[in-house]
Length: 217
Image (cartoon, rainbow, N blue to C red; front, side, top):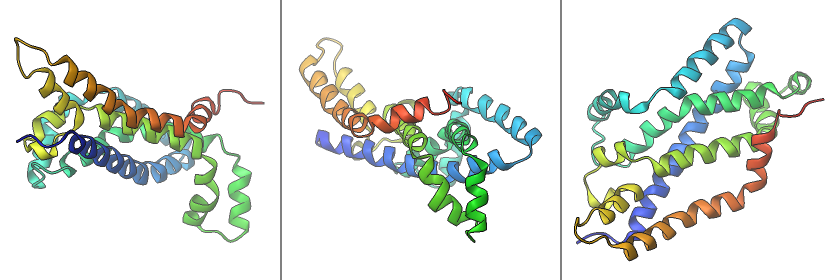
């Protein structure tokens, strides 16, 4: 029989959290490197990242599918986590690099004088200061992973590994003669609860991250 509904919720949570953490682990040092690189290199990199962020990822579908096959990731949640993290990198790096760029360079110089190496400066000084931007970026990545449908539909066939959007589409399309409004409405409400809780928990950080750099002076 079909797995219980909470299983779809759990799958989406695992994929969303995993792709968010993986994205930040790569994007934070990449964003820092981008802000500290030469102006010309930084400019070119930004244009490339903007292009990558705007590029319709569906066009990469076959290439991503070949990568998943070569890594033997069929019917595994990693088959979703890794592509989602990769697709989220351009936007995450752009957002975090803007946050790093807004930090006074004096802070980093003071940390260097205190004897901190690069990773210590990031860990103890810089990353805590960009926490609002990091939170906003993390939530955007999580929302993308939570709502993504084409990859999840194609790459996962095991009912126990389906994510919420695919499971809800199956409920809605169970019959062309009768639409199960009750089941679909219940699934929609339950599927929205984690997102509502997420926004309520981090609303201050989200607002701070979205407005940072908007007013200066």
